[in-house]
Image (cartoon, rainbow over all chains, first blue to last red; front, side, top):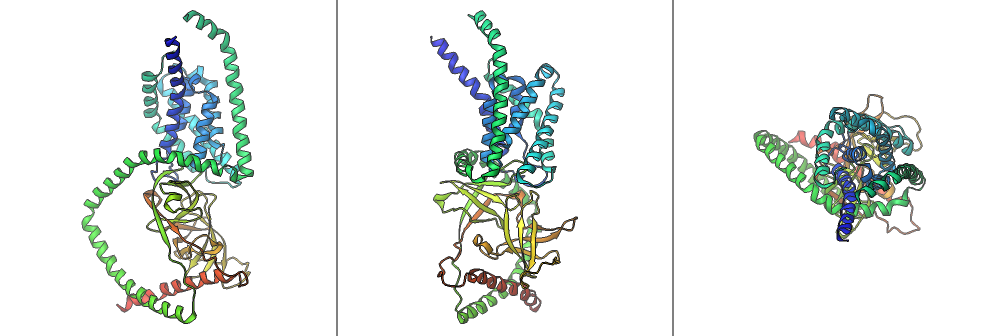
Length: 171
Length: 322
């Protein structure tokens, strides 16, 4: 009985951890680095988290968790509500559909895949923002964010990997 | 036991994949619906935004503290290496400012005498609340800050936010201990401005770049003039106080001309160096009697700017006298 109970607790923890990591990543993105306007903006850490968990442990990062992470970012940054929720879910869907192709590949392939995903996410963010505000803005900040996220992904991929190894049961 | 779990897995797996897909589609639909709803009725989520900012603020405050310390430390080290250069620059600046100070004192006395003669209603003094920027939006198309001062500290919606150089934005939401600032570079930002010394009116509109655009530039002295006016670059842009939001005369930046011929504003404030900001507690004079001329308040604002304009014009002379 107590074992079942214990496993339930650990299940809860497992379900919660990737979500909390992603929320923490949103907060990292919002750190005031003084990069909020210009071409280079803060790296999209939460995008890295959504990408990572969708690729390696999608069952621990269900769609509603992805939605909540995006919604939290939209509310906290006071942007268009639903923007990042939409983009993270689309990214999640793409990764999920290509998952079997990428699992077990060399890290380099996954890194390139993330770069492409970051680019897609940036373009989506640009297109949705342009529609939302009804004015065409420069897409450069989106590319800047995609680029800096791509550069930093190896570091964060490694951090997520060690979190996964240390705290989550292996499948 | 393990085997049974495996069997259950095998049976439920297709179903789980299906439900995963279903809920993915469902939530994508939901976020699109939210986008459409927010587009139509932007104010609906204001309350939720403020709540989330308030909950996030304490964590962001902790997370951003090491950043502030590092920034200070880097600043200290840089100061140490620049001490000689900086000292010389400050001495020069001090000499120049002394000349300005003499001119300002003279102007102040003259202005006080005129005000007494004309029985001008003096504007209330401007108090301020200082807060630290603990979060920015981090996204590519939104420019907002969260500041660690809120309603309890006297911050209210609509207050102008300045740093040491000039205007950076306005308060758009307040919680008890944190508030949100919309920067002048954000796509939603519109600020009525005056261009000095030519005294043109314009609306400064954020366009998500470092240099906001100047829209509806018009010559204030000519009523309903529709022709395009020419502005010399390097003129000062200040708040006009029109629309009853900001105190008049807050410095914003200088006029620059973009490569496409459009007028832009280069803000004085350095957005790469955000740290402490001030929220100005300014009560726009509203206690005018209903019978009186509704144009009175803007009129008052423009006289104030006339004064500062004269100050700008005379001060270089004062400098050459020294």
